[in-house]
Amino acid sequence: MKKSKLFVSFLTIKSSQLFPDKEYYLNANDIIIYNIYLPDFLNLQSDLYLFLNSIEIKKAQRFYKEIDRNRFIIYRAILKLLLGAYTKLDVKNIYLDYDFNKKPYLASHPWLHFNISHSENFATIAISRKKVGIDIEYLSDDFKYSSLLPDIFDDIERVTIQNSNDKKKTFYMLWTRKESFVKALGKGIDEDFKYIPCSDGQHYVDFSLIKNSQNWQVYTFDLTDYYLGTVAFEGLASNSNNIEMYSMPNNMKDLLKMKPMQ
Image 1 (tube, rainbow, N blue to C red):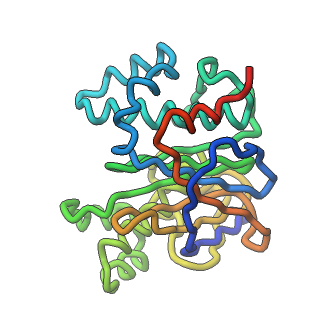
Image 2 (image 1 turned 30 degrees about the vertical axis):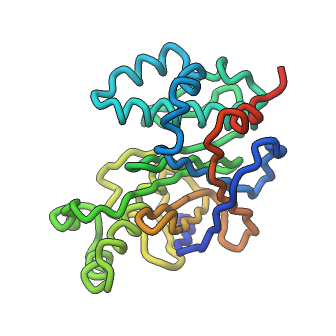
């Protein structure tokens, strides 16, 4: 049976402040990560709300807690601003389509791949010409994960967590690796989740597990002291990839510079 290669590692990625009037263009091996520290954007919520369409407004209204509703408005509007910058589409005319696993995509621009993750005070968006998935997690002291280990990790992975000097961080590292990978694949969390490799190194994965023949890379990175992230994307580890990370500006003047000229 044919197998795909999956390379997994930890990577140091330095975050830079985004200059919104930069040229938004993707080369074949670019993976661009955008970070949004949500509390810094709460005062912009009413301005960002104007970029949502009627479907997104209804979705926002379904959030029970106001803080969750405001966070959704912020990261959805910024996602649309970024998509508008790369596609030159009018932001208000961007409507996301969804595949059978509810992964969003742009039917008008199938070459543009993107994925979003949010946890507590951060949201992160990954954009690439490659299939891409991203997952970030807040390293919570309150989350009791021990009972979940047999369902989501194999024996070797469980031992890795149990023998770690920082069990909590190791748990979240391995979890985000699996989660970002299934998001890149467009899979949900199913019975295959446990068998997706997430330890450092190169692995060989059966086509039956991932349903395609691509090779993949998965890289974990520190977002802040209390947040961990992982990005997964297509390609062999021997290929030269350009992974960049930016912090979004928290003022409307700079954000509006991202809008394409009409």
